[in-house]
Image 1: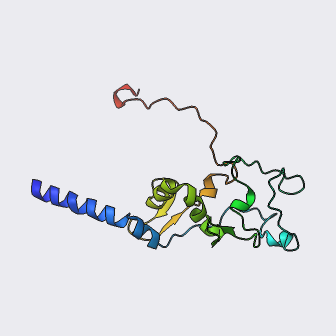
Image 2: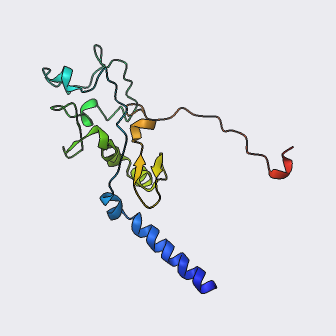
Image 3: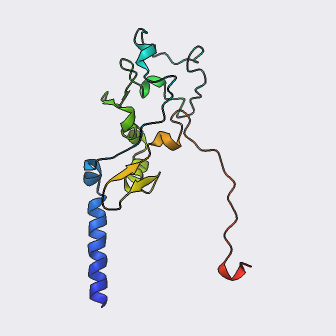
Length: 166
């Protein structure tokens, strides 16, 4: 009986490590709902098509002045993530264009362990079959990409033990 349990455990560990290896995760077809983009501002090129990009770090005063950048704001600026030539796209550090629907690729450049956990279903929300098609929420469904830190929360009291419930 112990041999069967040990063998089963070994097979389970092997399958989990194989299925969640970086190579297998990279090959998965990741399904996400549309990103939470404002219809007032997207598609971006409707306004930006005739504007020259201004990569200068500055306080935005006319448009997008409601955006508070609190995401490594001392080192980051809009054009570090948003593409200057095609505002309907994001871009990686190497300049590769990234669709908003695949923004996890952009976030994962700096937040690799979170991306790994997100793909494995440990971080974020994922629905679907454990061994089949899954749907993930993008980082931006839960985090504001310009100011992603959650407000501090007061922890709830521990649950009562069954013998203490009246």
